[in-house]
Length: 193
View 1 (cartoon, rainbow, N blue to C red):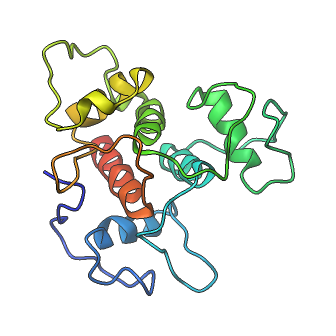
View 2 (view 1 turned 60 degrees about the horizontal axis):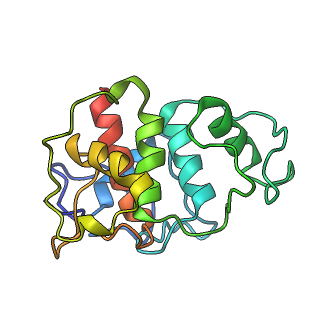
């Protein structure tokens, strides 16, 4: 299976002007209907553009139903006036992200970083203690996944939350697109139902 695998049902309504016929159309529209994804002021979602770390964390905080909180500090590159400050605080308080010097909110998120946030936001829907010793990646570039990210990518793959690329690779250091993050978020919500 690949990230662009078609969802099974047709979307019911147009939420964005630029997702019609896109492989992630159903995922995006379902998440829009639930208030999890938002577009820009022009009514576009920009599915093939990269997503920032702050934007993806916001998506996951909404999907997990975690309320935003007043920012109390902790990152040198996040201030209370930033649109994502409440999301960052919610992420810190819930353990989805870790305290560090910088959060890098405006950097694009990589596919392996996406997996870490995805798994930590999944909560009780993912058994973090599942035995993956004999679980082997089907990705041709599995050896390129960073050591800290291997377990998160394994868990996301094992539970079918993330899939490979058309070429059979995972591309762990590639930036994730808005469509890809919508797909993994949709699959997580399906798992919760």
